[in-house]
Image (cartoon, rainbow, N blue to C red; front, top):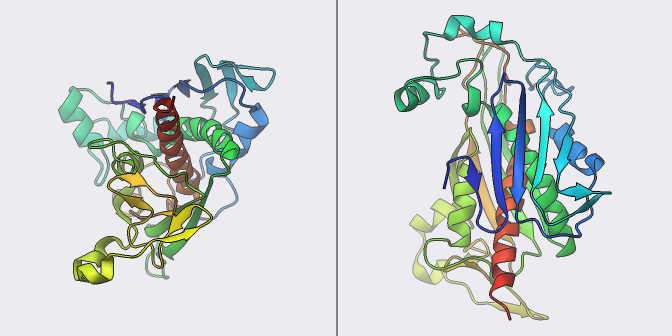
Length: 312
């Protein structure tokens, strides 16, 4: 499977470069009859687009106006491939001409050059955070499907780096916590397609995410088995535990408790110090949240469809 495609039954393929003509996504496997409009998708895009009023955000001004090309008719999905795109309107490739023969610290410039023997040096090409606009479009569709199952994804910032007066032109990281509430039980496939395995792949594939943990996470290294193991609480057919050390997933399969994930987000590599290059975010946290939501939703929907497919 090509590296730009994710999912088995709800399959998402993204395309486009940071400073190319446009970026887009193709979704194959979306069920028919899902109500979704350009307004629904635009609402999600507006949450991540650059140039908003957040002081931590890049100064690049992009409208990120979605264009639905196929798969949706009169605001309802057809069951055929959905294709969407946004055009780049504030691309400035001239800002990066001096980087043609320079590999920026912390970026994928060197990696792409070594892999392909050629690279799009205009803002990182496919490795740019701009690629995530495609994921958010797909995530908007996935969230509409999750609404039918009353599944909600909540994200909290539990740590945000700070800059002091001496940290001019620098950047900061942070930690996000994801909770998938009302998650159906039975999601996840043994042995290699465990739900936590696919969620980890989906979330780590986002540029800037450097570490992930589920439930108690790294704290389990200091626990005894008697502390980590928890009795199940049955409330009207839904199971949970007191502390949710497992993060809602056991044996790679959800059992009905909240799915709890924490992510470490690195400071943006583009900074205004000696290595100054292009327009950049001071922190990825504000704009990465809708991307994290999208990849979580896409993964949950893919496994929902897979679980439904095994039932006669």
